[in-house]
Length: 309
Image (cartoon, rainbow, N blue to C red):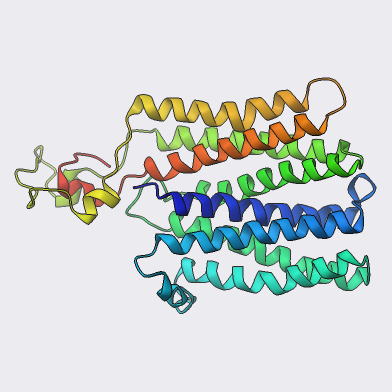
């Protein structure tokens, strides 16, 4: 699949924003590290909402007619894309009300109730985003429960990295936040390693199974066109095996190895080290998301010369 920058930015930014908000709420609920100051908590919440809003806005640039984006909300009964939009829009009023109460450090019970509803909607949105891709049986690399699981875990991991930076910036105790980041980092590494092993297995549809002729090797004699079409540009994007290997290595380097090294250096974590780890992790997330789209092979390619998807 063609890896559009707008969709990559949308999934990384909104996933980070949702993960950041959920973990901010958890920190408030359980008072991790003694809790964040009221204004720091509210400003972090605004950062999370800004990331979600910016990501959602960027997703419209992938549409041929962005002014028709409202139509994406109309099929929520059957479409994961519509459910994602409905859940995301419903998230904002609860999140903003929670942030307003956090700013004044008021009405803790009401604040936590509003935050809980916002967290449920954040989880529902992240899951729906993953299911947009996981429900597509025509793309083997996406049609697996590992995809929505990865969206949830990676969103929380990148959000945890930003929350750790905020904790270091305000001088709060960061021990609990460092442990949270390491746990999510390990979960993300295991999940993506499992996904890359699964996606690399040599099975899937072939031109024989697509046409139903299974007793002899089938090959395409004529594609029916003499130049690229929308299908070949959008669904026929190719990435070499060597490039895939190095991109996967880059993900584990930037998103896993570098943050882990900075967090386990054996001395008190500084703000600079925490910020460097967060930047490295989000850079690795961008690499992972680009490869997620580039590595996907739609079965339509079988009718344009490919022998296997």
